[in-house]
Image (cartoon, rainbow, N blue to C red; front, side):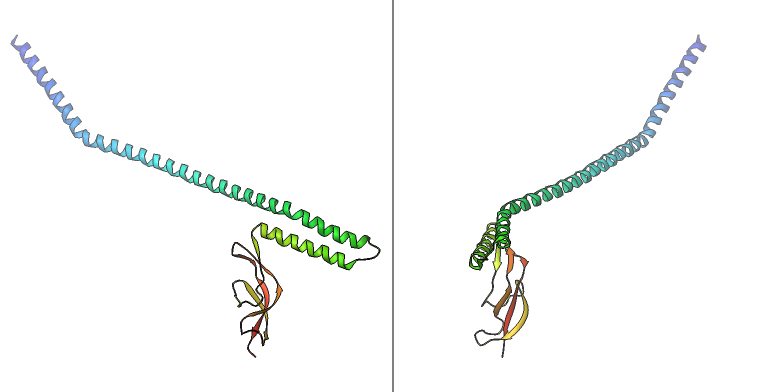
Length: 188
């Protein structure tokens, strides 16, 4: 019996040793296990951040494309409104030209009145759409809105004043569309 007790004692000791060894192994593996878990979670975080970055980049590209499409649509709408308002003026001009071609006797006074009325219609149409004429006669020359074609001596004006307008200029909300082409006074 004594031998049986010794064997059981050895078995118990072996069990205890095995348990201790397992615990030691777990304790020694714990930092490695934690490091491995950290590496896996960092890799997951990196993947998640990369996916978020790709989604954000795709969203920005979609917004850019949508804005470009909306800008193009707004431009088309703006042009169509302008053309719709301009077509009647063009019709009047075509009628005036047609009347000259078919008339046996040309009434120049009537023709000039028709062209003058058409010019007023065009000017009113431009103003309706926010386009202002630049007619700088007798004003100080401004290189931002005027283009000097020539200089001429003048008794009536100081040097640097607009004495003649060859072509009117146009601006939209203070943004130059076309400068006024002018003659400028110079010193004698």
